[in-house]
Image (cartoon, rainbow over all chains, first blue to last red; front, side, top):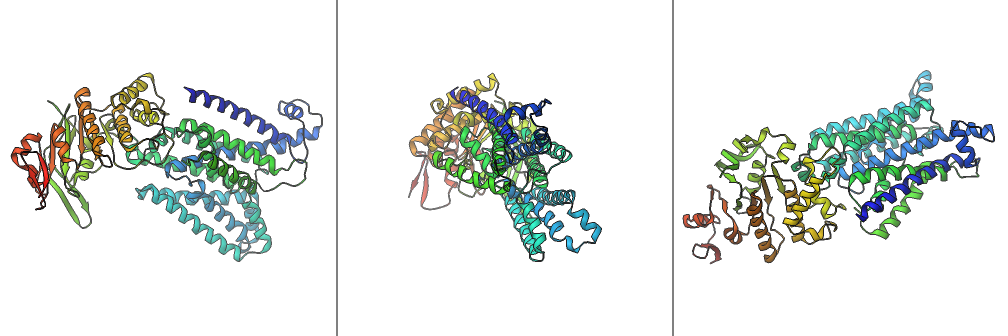
Length: 342
Length: 258
């Protein structure tokens, strides 16, 4: 079929795009390193300058890998949410997971003043922040899972998620009201998102969680396709709805929870990338959408990373702002051009 | 003829905190293969509850529903999906599914963990589309076609699911007379050609009388199942609506406004 051929070409292009973006993100930055030297440092060869090799292996490679993990994870969790909730506006944010993570971090950073001195040191270390945001999102996850066991209606879970979100946001604003300018600044920096600063050990933990989430998502491809006809049809086609729903929510939570913990709340990707994939491939088949969302997610976050590094400049812009600035117009443009938002 | 689905002393209704609401009692229905069976009754009489109960979505108050001699409550979801397919009235959620993909979803009970279609699956999908005469729509999106065409597509999906029993909930609502007739004729043809049993609820009683092999009439007092001509001679239709504005003309076999 003509469609299959078109899809194959698109996939090849996307794979090439990903490779190109990966290399660009390694090569561009405050110091521009030629592709040849990037290749040499990666393959264990001798780059023209030893500082280049050091920059690539210790700064840019971890950052690029984080970008790929963040992009794939957030986008896939958005895809799962949009189909499960039959809502084009759904994303990892709707379950309140990111807000939960923010709450955890807010407690640690803004509430540190109330802690005894030695606890304060621990809490404000980078591990403390990761731990706090993981705890925060896990707590919200557990609450959502608990509620989803009680509620038969999927829409109700969506609303509960939104409520958790506003609840935690409210507590965060109360905390900010009582905190010092210095604490506020630190919290704002965290909330702007950061792909760098991750040790190889943290990357391993993140990679493991993201892979686990992606495997669960891949296993949900068939249930997701069944859910395209609505829950009742899905059940009539032999789907164990409760189990499928639980797996999908669990996968999303692992993906967005772990990513928010390590890279901060990154806006827009989870909502927009699935739409970019759907509009490009013109399909609702999740076998196609899974892989295209995966690739698009990685490419777009890498691209945002390249932009935020501001090639040739010394400053790095916050990734959270870049994802929205680049992403929002892209979605609007695609919508206006294709006109069916599904 | 062997029954595909049968009920024994089935009581249907709802259990709530306030107590038990019984909708119908002592139902002994028999759905046999190759038969087109219509379910009629006034609004709110409990047709949906009956359909929900015999499809295993809702538990009966008492009594049993047997599908192929096995109680429906003992079926696993997947096994049930291989024996019973549904066409529902609810609107489909927005998606980009093409007609072919939609029909192919009916193969889910038979496909592997990612839902890959085998050669057999593709053949079954084409067969279902051929029977319902929607092959020319295959590459159209499901939201681009008319209501009548969509109804056929949903029936094709149920056919692709390859079950001995298909149950449709009010498949003719939103259709004009011409499309209602053609849909009924299609269902009739399907029962004859595939030897499946098709049960559908409807408000188009005149058409149902003319085309069904058997009818199930629900009234507050009783539920009867019989061939349309027997039901007419028994006077069952006269009990359907308790209103002086509408009477059943047994000679013409239809309702008349008095």
